[in-house]
Each structure stands twice: as structure tokens, then as C-alpha cells.
Length: 440
Image (tube, rainbow, N blue to C red; front, top):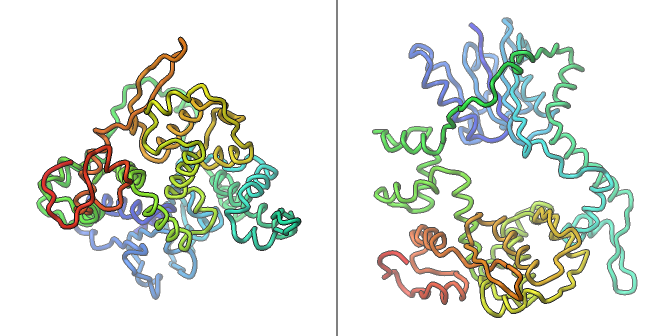
């Protein structure tokens, strides 16, 4: 019999989901022939040639090197490439654990966000790391000198090597399928495209194909399931436990439980509402745990950057709608060019190439930054007129805030760590003991 391998490059969750689907739909006589190997299963084959023989083996990036499957009969290998986790050489290494391949089938997600280059040129990459020198200890130590009390960047061999390496990694990630196919050709694979060009042209692109809401499907399966301890519900149960959500409230908060994006938004919104002291403590922890380049794009670092900007221009956090701000809408500001370029890169700002010129433009920038971190409906807007000119003013969406605070109270019953302005706006306070009843 042919043994099918499925290799996934993005996460344990993806390969686990596909494993569960395949096994559930397999004939009962071969269900015991399925093997799942991820970092969570913690199963490493001692002799793959024996243990994998006549089995369907699914494995994640936990297996790249050190495992060889030698078998007399040629086998089919299926490669599922999603995300930017592994570079093409490691994908090839992972796919060729079987030493006698008949056909290697590979699928690649071509969505723009998965294939977009971070650095358009090597010079752009060099300038990027020059601008964020203070955020990178390695560059700071190896590539800077002090002259007249000022830290200056020296583009020495280490810096050039570091930049070139980062640029090449980005090229590999953004052009992953190109380099993967190049490696296949170099290793004598014949590449055949099974998607006929003419067939693609004949497809009616206007067909109304219904989209399946995966989170909705998983929710319905979970609610209907008699056994909620099944492997496919493992992440759901972990989230319910993490959020401390009672069974009777699963329906109320199903979006957060069953939707990855909504869950991430929830934690982002809660962080947005927390005090400076608490955010600073979180940042200290992340600084110890994260590589500096990763730290720049972290949610907590972005929140600190926003608060620093608001303090600089004397704008009260959460109070973008106050008269004090609106009266300054036409005030001219001078945003430091270097600082603005840094903010643009971190928050991916496309507007105001030369920086905001007025207080109103700065408010628009801040609203965009906060939406970038939290969610698009964190604010509600209202049109106002100033000197016959139409402007928008922005208010916190209390309905959205209330929803997320009522979720968070399940794990934070004493209402700790919120920003003082949030206590004031929503008229509550930190509790000394767990005697809070009801919703905010």
C-alpha cells in the first residue's frame, strides 16, 4: 500500500486539524494506521523505517532533520506550505525524510500577506536597521561609536553582514515557492503543474460560491458534540479554561472562543485599557524574553509608543473627543522627520508621508494606530464644524469596551490594572475583595 505523508510548515494546529479530518473520514479498518507527530505529541521515532511502515504519517516542523524513512516501495509525499515559518531549504529537508519518493505533491498559500516582501531592496533594509539602531542590542554593541557624546552608527562588516542576512531571509520567505521549486529542480525532480491553464480561464469568476465560516462550523460541532474532550476541541477547551468562561456563557462569548482573530483582538483591547505601570511591567518581561527586532512590532511596545506620542503632544489617553483636543485641531505641529519614519515603519502608516502637519492630522494618525492594535470599531465618530470646515471627532465605543471588560472580569474579578481614566469613564474602581456581581 502507499503511505501518505503530510508536511505542514506553519503550526501544530494546522497539521493536527488535517490529521483529525483524514482519520475521521478513513475506513474503520485503517484508523489505527494514522500517526501524528508534533511538538505536543512528543513522539520521536527511534526507527522510522519500522515504525512508519504501512502507516499514514502526519508531521509538523518538529521533524526536519535526523529522521530517515527507508522503504523499498516508492511512497507519495504531500507537502502543505502555509505561513513564513520555515525557509525553502528546511522545507525540502522536511519533505525528503522519505528516501524513496514516487510523487511529491505540494500546496502553497499564495495570499498576498504570506508573500509580501518586508524589504523592497537591500538599501531599504540597510536604512531600516539604521533607523532602529537603538532597538537592537546586537547592532548597538557591534556597530556604534560615541563621538562628542553622540552615538553614531558605523556600517562595518558586521552591520553589512547582518543586513544582508536579514534581506536574504526576507527574500526566501516572500519568494518561498520559487526557491523551493528551484531546489527541487536541482535535485532532479520533474515539476508538473496539474492545474490546466485553459481550465482556469473557463471558470466563471462571478459564481456566487458560499463562504464557510470556520469558527461557526466549529462552534456548532462543539455545541452538538456529546464528547467535548475530542482532540479537535483541544484548543477550544484551552481557551474556555484560559478565559475562565462558564459553560452557560459560551454562547455569549462564542466569537472570542472560536475565532483566532477575535481572541487576539480581545487581549489587545484589554492591554489598551490597562495602566501605564502595568504596561511597563509587561514590556520589561517582553524585553527579557524577545529578540529586539521582534519586540519592535509587539503589541505592548506599540501601546507604549502611542502613549509616548500622546504625552508629547499633551493629549489625554482615551480623550480624543474632548473640547481641549477639538479646540486644537487647527494647531500646526512639527513632527520630527526621523521619529515619524520610525512610527510609519512600526505601524505601517501609508498616509502623511512627511508627517502630520496639524493636530487634527495627528488625531487621525493616533486613531489609526489604536485601530491597528485593537479593532476597527474601537471608536465611534461624529462630524463637527470648525470655521466652516468639517472634521471628525472620535469617542470610545463603550459597547465594545463593555463587552471585552465583561469577558476579562471572569479572570480579573477585582478589576485590577486598568488605566485610571478607564475607572473614571466607566465609573468603577479596583476592588479589595471579590464581591462584584453582574456586568459593568
